[in-house]
Every structure is written in C-alpha cells, then in structure tokens.
Length: 517
Image (cartoon, rainbow, N blue to C red; front, side, top):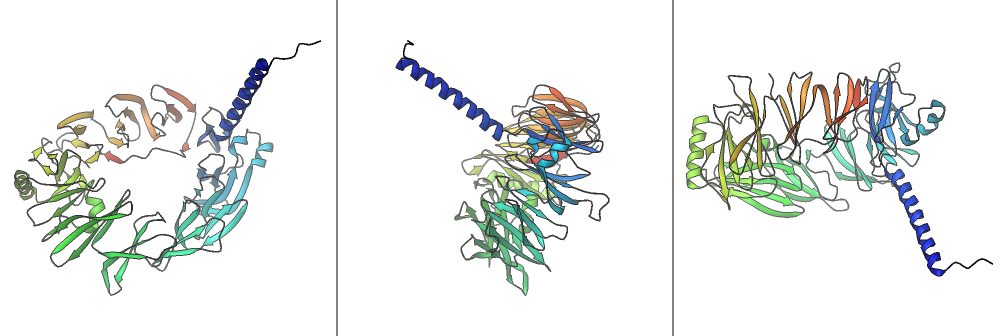
C-alpha cells in the first residue's frame, strides 16, 4: 500500500506546477509581444526582412517596394508594391498586409500570410492604429480609405493629410483652396464631424485642444483670428492676432492695438500673458518667428528695454543696464542682431541673423541670474561662421568654420565655458538625450562618429555611405554596400549587398549642422 502524499509535498508540487505554468505563459506572451521585425532591405531584385533575433526572411511576391509600415505592435507589415508594367505613378502600387512573423521563406506557405488590401495606394501615406488592425491609405487621386477588421471604407475625397487620434481619425480636405478639418470615430464611418471650415493654418493636431486660424475679414486678408475647439464643442474665438506659433504644449500668439503689442500663451489649456510691448513691438517680423528664433522670443517694451522669452519653458528675462548698452553697440556695429537661445543661466545673441542663421559670424553670451542678465561677452573668435546655434538642456551647441580655412569645430557652451567637442567635421546630428552623430571626410564616403552626452567620442566606421540611429544603443550603417549594426561597442555584419534599406523606427535629431567643403 502506497504511503499517502503529505500535505506539504502536495503544496510544494502544486506551487512548482504553478511556477512552470506561469513561465510558459510569460514565454508565450513574450513571443506574441516581442518585436522580431526590425527593418527591410533590398538586395538585387529581392526584398528581405531582418528580425531582431538575427533571422532573415524574403518578402514574397514583391516587385518594387516603394513604401512600408510596421504596425506599432509589429504583428503586421503593410507595404506598397509598384508594378513597373502598370500605369500607376512610381510612388503608387498595390497595398499588402503580411503577417511577417509567420513567414519562413517558403513561397507556397508564405502566400497564405500575405493579403492584398488595395489595388492602388500612394506613398507615403500609410498610417497604422496602435493595435495594427486599422490602416489609413490614399489612392493616387487623394481619396482616403481605411482598412479595418477585414473591411475597406472610403472616408473622403481630396484629402491632403490624415492621422489617428485615440479612437478617431482626423483628416484634411482641400478643394479650390478651401481647407476643412474633419474627424470620424473608428467604426462610426457614416458620422464624420466638421471641426474647422475654410481655415488658414492648423496650429495643433490634438482634437481635444485644437488651434487654427481663419481670416477675420475676407476683405482684409492680412488680419487673422485664432480659434480653439475640441470635438463636441463650438469654436472659441481667442483674438485677432499678429502671429501664432506652437512649441510642444505651448501656443504663443500676439495681439496688437494702437501703441501696444501683447504676447500670450496657452500652456496645457491655461492662458496667461507673457509680455507687453509698446513702440517697436516685436523685435523681428512676427510672421517669421519659427524661422528666426531657436528657443527665444524677444519683445521691446519701450524700444530701449528688452524682454526675452524662452518659448519652451516660458522663462522671461530682461537686460541689465550694462547689457542693454552692449546690445545696442553690437546692433549698431552689425545692423542685424537676434537672440538665438535662452537657457536657465545664459542668453545668447548673434549677428547676421537675417535672412538665415547660415550667415552668422559671431556669438555673444550674457549670464542670467533670477530674471536679469549680466553684460555680454563674445564667445567666438576670428569672426567664424557658426551655423545655426541650438540650445538643449542648458547647453548651446554650435559649429564654427574659419572663413579663411577648411577647419571646422563643433563646440558647446555650458556653465560659462566653451568646449570643443569635434574637429574637422562636415555634418553633426544632435539628439534629445544630448548625444551626437557626426561625420567627416567626403559626403559620399565618410568616417562616422558617435559622441555620448558626456562628450566621449567613438569611431563607428570608415567609408560609410548612409547611417540610421535606431535607438540610444544602436546605429545601422552601410559600408561598401553591406549593412552593419553598431551596438555601442562593436559592429556586426547584418546583410551583404544591401542596395536600399527601410527603417521603421528611428531617433529623430532635434537639430543638424552641415558645412560644405
């Protein structure tokens, strides 16, 4: 007779079984939620998907890939395939959806996991919902369609742009110069909503807090009115404006009247006045605000005293008496002086700012304490061309080029000191985390460099012809026709003879500099 299992052993056995079941479930979930598809590349006449697990699979029945989009969960690959024998323009083709995780390179089986959605779609217009089950696309005649849950629905004609907003689709139609903004809830295709009719410019795309402009008077085309609306509400008239600009969550607009100029800001739905001006009003033409100002807006309350506003943080500073004298001297000497950046502890101005920053020759800095600056001092030498200065994380980044030589330096200014980061570089890309990609040499084959936020420089490779910043750790690049991946320490060959590469997700630089030799 067998001895009965003790309660303790039974509990231990059940616990072990539960752990095993949990591990299996977690493994299954990981397999379902992992992102094995990284990118697509062309080799010869064939197209391949390279997965993050290192496997490569051929994309079946593809003639000439012109566009593709992984859904956010990367369960599906949507792509447009152009048939050179068709009458479609080169940027159009048949739209397909592939369950790429199930592809194994066997064409007899792979065809069951590739579905044609439309005979003709144009590129680049593919936009996926968060779950990947719904995709927007346009046909060559600018008709917008949505494919969702195995059904295709026509949304609108004459569409110039479209995007997802939570469970809604927003789109813009344009007929004879009349722009309309509409929205429709996913699934409720027969009930579109007109949000803004015959608007001039769309300032934000958040349908819960939308800003747009319209003509105040058809007979006075230079006067615009700013409106605010959300889905389900009536438009709110904000003001007749001189200019409006959107930076992140902040919407700045100026209101003018006899002898005054007020600058206002909407910050996450809260409205407040930023600065007041009389006399000269804005220091530079308001309509060119996004072009001329990097991180600051300048106001002139009396024509002699100045206020500088950090458009990203709302910080406002004024010039001290000594700084105002220096500023006027610089202005008189160079005729064209503009603010280029305002950080927590410094204000930077430059000369030759018009018509573009490419003509800047000199930079000056004034320290900031509380809401007042100290006096200006020049931080450039020999009147070097400094490209387009840009402020990030209380650091000014700029590229210097001596006009009498081909020597270029990339520098930062932080905590009262200028530091040379790179020398003799052609191009630099700055990212939000403060890291850089740079290259020097010929533009067709260059040495690729990576600089981390602390200033440590690593040479990735020589003879590079193209690069992509995939993440903080990874950079893909083409060298001698082959595709490599740099992981922060070393490079790995991923594919040979890759003539063209498509990258679904990249880090976007916040600023770039390029100086031709």
